[in-house]
Length: 337
Image (tube, rainbow, N blue to C red):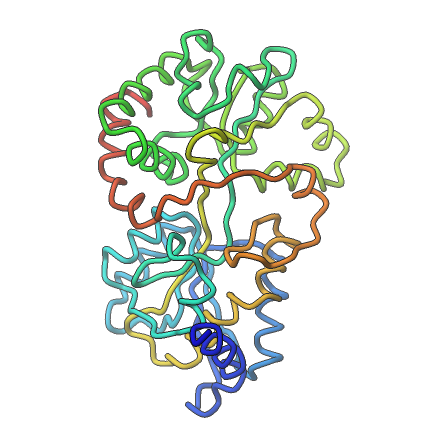
């Protein structure tokens, strides 16, 4: 009860950070979604705090904050993928946040001592309906099955999305078994890894390969596309929520934290708390096809409803982060380029 009371009190207090005198917030964001403009406008309308933002490539933006050091103007750092959040924490650019609201609203497995996830996206298996059935690829582990020789497409093994998934597999199955799995997937490649997630969807739909892995929100985007040819891609593919009989589908996140050298700490914490509000959480889902990080928030997104309900992996992201180096080394040994 006390925990809920504190969370409710904090929810009221974040709206009036003017008591600390902050009227501006410098946001470094690797999220390139036009839909986020509404979030920034709503925060400014409610708080009176103006957001000055710098956007950029995830890795480039991280390196910029590191290079700026003590002179960085950044107050909040937002990025996508747990691997990059772990990098930011490892480089010491983030500071702990003392917020009862964030502790109460963001589940423990979706935060660390220095950052919080604010939205999630699942890593799903897609397959060509003419070449495979859902029963052929029920798990991530099944992608290494010999019956899939010459049928798997993938993006680079060095990409954080794949690193995060492999780091999770290490936690669930052990390093040796995961390396054996990676070698099996490499043996099943239809082509050398290339492109992004949307490219994998197009390759599966075209029959260049029979199966691949993609983030869920790319599928939802295609469902809502104004281009008929993009919507038609989805008629040729099926979607599998992996590992529903075991640990659940791997989820990745978009999240961020307070920059250690922030000059506007009250505004920064207010913004982070705002991102955990019901309205912001619904926006992540309804406008950008992500799932809320806060449990119990109701959303209204027909495309996400079409994808269906699933059991998500609740592996702590901090555990995943601890396996990232092992994941890269393992993939390199397996020839997963």
